[in-house]
Image 1 (cartoon, each protein chain N blue to C red):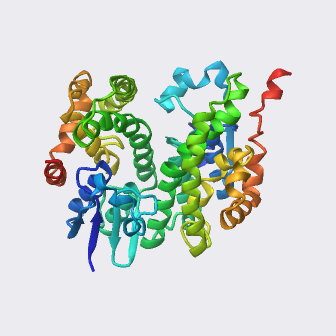
Image 2 (image 1 turned 180 degrees about the horizontal axis):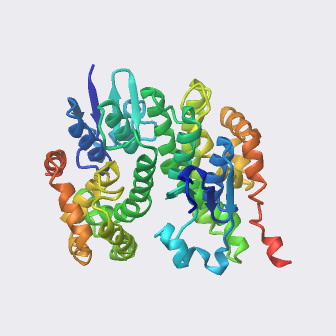
Length: 215
Length: 230
């Protein structure tokens, strides 16, 4: 039994796991989970992810949840340098910016993605522009800090690319595909950094999977 | 810097107000690690966290910040990981693929499943009254419902594992302590945890750790409000 990832590629958290598998060149099977019909809340999926979310991840007998934990497992097992765990200081800085990704970037992007993509496409409703505007303001405050950081360093943790950078790509993918993509124009280093991440072969492959899933 | 000094001879400093469960989380990791450190207190009411010197350390203007030699870190979970990786790597499962994966999963569970509803309850039940704001019971009820479902998963997990990540205590257990400390002082703490015998036992054991007892003393349940009035 090999590696299985359960969940739609279009989910930012599933995509985060897939990009790590692609980075280490692992073979895996992507198993669909039909979320509009509530499959993720049914017993079979709950046995894999007790919080009823995606992704769930299986490697042999091991079942994992939480995309950033799964990402680290995949990268460690695959001998990737994206965590810098050979160096105490470097790995600490990677951890800082991984926390920032979750706490400052994705926390602002998730409501925007929900309003601009999930509500219109999956639920056939209208976005709440007040929620979008509030979170765009939060995002811009974060982007100011990112701009200053990326003016000093090529990547978030320093001169080397790490999981901290790549972990941003799923939400950045949706930002670029939203009506608010021009928000990054005011932050030229951020814009260039996003383009750099999006040029990675692993990222390109997973973006294709994300688009196919949404079609 | 004097000749012959190395980064390891610089003291370890933790900046921030200890009543914050985030600052206290970092303090707990230092206490568990047995590190010789200096806690540099800060005053949020005086805007210490917005001063240029602090922003130079944490551009998001938050606490805690850790200085460890030449390394400056922020985000309490990243600080705790670094401190324990350096001094007590077994608490992270370093070098063990499966254990480190389990530790990471439950670290993320703490951050994404446990923390948001628990923080919302603590904010409404403890912080709001201290700031002269009425509790928003709708917010409380919504988050109590969410946390109840999360704690049921913990109860099941602790039924098959001694601690969250396996047979031995890990940073994943420890990272829960500081916010749980505040949560358990609200009426919802005993109400939600009381009916869950394994979660209750796990919590009591966590709170009995010497490092936890020491850090609990930095987190008075009124956030030090009566001291301010003096």
